[in-house]
Image 1 (cartoon, one colour):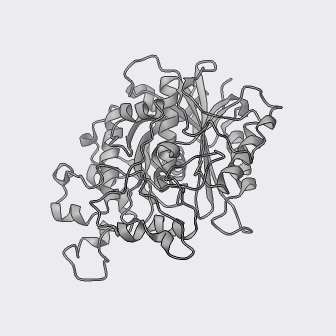
Image 2 (cartoon, helix red, strand yellow):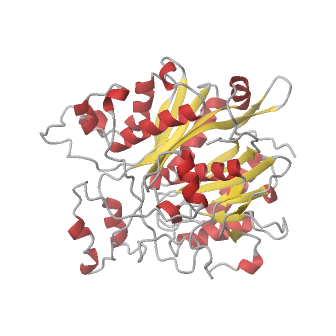
Image 3 (cartoon, one colour):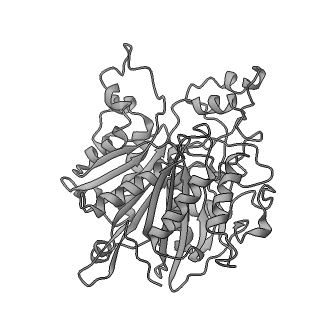
Length: 451
């Protein structure tokens, strides 16, 4: 079956579908991971990459870890998914002065080097792009890094760009000399897939010939832990148990990921590998009704159905779903309800798609969560294996598993292709009500050493 994808592709002169594809990847994740082989190894082995709070960021850890002594506040465990190299950066390599580098939000520094790696992975020399009309679409959220700009300090004069959210994408464009659209996207936890959605639209609309899409999260302060401690929404044991009966809340994390996006005809002509065809991406909003932070199963269901329709394939072809899976007792059952009605309907198929969440390995990387999940999905496709989701051996009883073909990915297992293609999906839902979903077709690659 050859899917038609009107929202993320065009037709060639011969009438063939010219899909928008992913031709390269770069990643940085907790546990000291800064390359694709290490990331895949951790995922395939089902490793827990959660660690202690960093001791080199001058965070008020004594207060933070004692918040449960304050009436109405929950406990904060000494646990999170933190980047080992968040404080490391080579400014001279990117033509940035040391003083300016110190004033830069670490998110700008991390995404810059991850974008460089993604380009190299695609076989593109980043140093040769000066003046090229390449798009840059990056997801990011405010990080509260450094001193306030409204005071006299050693970083004054550099803070206007150093703290600007727009500079997350702008730094990449400036350092590489890229002249296409340069946009930082903030739809909270849906930012990654929103950035991919916008990059695909820009290529399709001829705003740029190709683009970088990605996202980053480096916490400049532990603000997210304070907020969720007040809401009693943090995991009591410091672990995200997505879709599990033992889930008690989320755990915050960090990370970054970038993918190279272009038309398939361009990738083939330049000899780039095609890791995945972006059959369709869609975004929507919950609308009014429940409080803004409460997910909507009906909105998620509408989104998934619209994405499947746009992809032009049957839902039964999708074997692997990289879910949002924050481990919250409210959010996970609502997400499962939407997925069971769309991908797990027994009347559609008895094959049973596998569902997992990379958050169980690395924590909830917020704006970058969806990109870490997308790259996980692509690596599963490359390797022909479904990576396990941690704690999947204890599925929540809030879902009637006998009434759905959906199953949690509890172990590493083979992923068989369908006519030379593996189909997967990825979801991200933002705390401000934005939802994002994408469907990816991954052609079987015969070459070795792909990552």
